[in-house]
Amino acid sequence: MAHKPYAPIPMVPGPVTLHPAVLTAMTRDYGSGQIEPDYLKLYAETGRNLAQLMGTQSDMVLMTGEGMLALWAALKSCLVPGDRVLSVGTGVFGDGIGDMAAAIGCEVLKVSLPYNETIDDLTGIEDAIRSFKPKMLTAVHCETPSGTLNPLADLGALKQTCGVPLFYVDAVASVGGAPVQADAWHADLVLGGSQKCLSAPPSMSFLSVSPAAWEVVEAVGYQGYDAIAPFRTVQQDGRCPYTPYWHGTAALNAGALAILNEKGGMQGCFDRHREVAERCRAGLAKLGIDLWTAEGAVNSPTVTAAIVPEGFTWPEWRQGLRERGLIVSGSFGPMAGKVFRLGHMGTQATEALVDAALDVIESVMQD
Image 1 (spheres, rainbow, N blue to C red):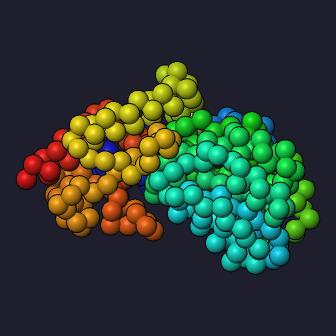
Image 2: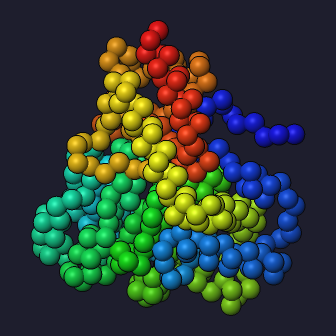
Image 3: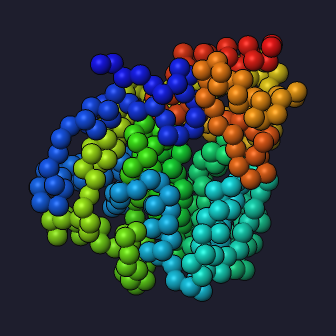
């Protein structure tokens, strides 16, 4: 039986429509990941493929749980109460990471920008780093609620210049859809999830861990389900710290391979995302719909955030689109009720899907 998507025009920014290779991987029967050597081979292969997407030579950790698990795991494995964390926020998730660090007892300083902007002038951030002297600097690559993509190369260079021990990057909504360069950014912990550009279910999270980060992990000694320390020796131990999700790992690997084997390889995939995003935004502009992002900010190639058209409430707008088969997302925080989002990531980054979405949007506006 052919697979049918859950909606005629699915355009939510994750979880996205599953890739056919992912569906195939999910329908196979597997043994016990705790006793079969084949699972460890798959774990290693998946890590290597994800490392390519992450732009890193660092170790990869694969965990059972959606992307938020990796965010918590990296914080709890590297921080203790009283540690200083400087969070750079250009949106809900950037500031939210600061809140997460505060929840585990850290002293947090937030450098927050308006949620429709992206990181540009680093003067204020540099001043904050030099005066606050954090153990960890945090940032988000793609802010999905805002539809923005933060340039991180200069921030990573600043981390290195100022001697910040750890740089933590949330790349959940960008890895596989935009270039991620963990090593070039001097990023010690780069976090990803299966349900966005990798077009897999929301079942797996992963992160790259630099040698410097491993030293901190060992010193902190955190133990718990979300601890990353036990994963360092998975291959030597011949087992994972808990029963691994073989189906989820296979699906994650299938999603990564689909990107690496795309025509043009990773760059071909990135080009597809960029071109589809540009097509989406040009179409919205033609219809008179404004983007949420400020002039000069960097739009994400994986998600577009636009302002709900005048004359519609968000519930009315959502329902009008849904009745015609188009499923989009609202947003959070100060954007709630004002912004709707189109997720052109992974399998959903196609011209045909964006064109169909734009046709529906036009029809609702004309009613």
